[in-house]
Length: 220
Ligand code: CO
Image: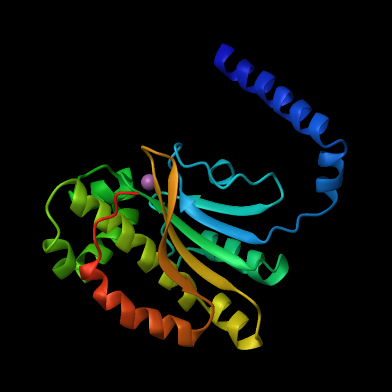
């Protein structure tokens, strides 16, 4: 229980610090949220969305699940996306994975962990789809890293193909989908080059992504 008591102490300190820096911060924020970004990331405790990009409460709408998966039948994720795009009118959706993702690695190694195996089957589908590329990548960390990247790209493309995004683009709404990855060991984000704001852009990206096999394994 002491540990939990600490969390409340931390909470009050955090709130006081923000309020000291910006008096009225919370009362103003409680009236309205107007974030420009939706973040779809992994649930991993080492990848805290707001902190990584230095954004305050109110600036980032967040959905996280194991291995940052966007499934066309996941009402939870789709509802977050719909609300963010249609009600909050975010301008950017960022799918952010991370190297060393336990979910991706478990999927790659076909490890049996329980119920979650069914969820991670989505990552195994990505693995099947890009088997050719993955087999050309040296086994071990490099291949794990590559699957983490491919999973981000695949999930970001899934975002583009949702009815929510398709309808937003059809209405002419300003909405860009991004694919990023985070490296745990240095805290750095990397843009995977997926930055799509229309179906034409998506088709163009698809043509480029076939060349993904030539990508050097990033060291950043
Ligand atoms: Co993860």
